[in-house]
Length: 143
Figure 1 (cartoon, one colour):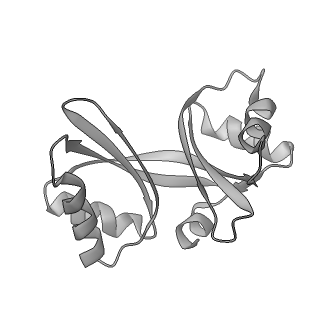
Figure 2 (cartoon, rainbow, N blue to C red):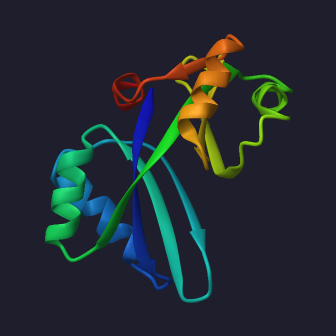
């Protein structure tokens, strides 16, 4: 039920993101979702792709600093309160959300919230016990 996410450290200057997307395009790797956070000097590009191993390999071969992180993908209806339904379930269980980002599925009916928890196993257990849909990596990579 866990998802592999790639984090890439980029200098905050023109062309860095283009270089990453070109390398992935040339390797026929599809980006499923992404998030970028920046400071004045560097950015962290977080990606979920359809082929994690290949993406790590080609990006490292091109000199990028890469790390892999475990995140959790939770599917909720795309309507007001969708994110709250996750937070409400986790409230009181002493689980910290380190960061999150989201995207809407092709159907437009559901949103997928990508969450980095301090304790992903406990979070997954709590979410499932409360009838929330936790997506396995294989399903997310193929959306």
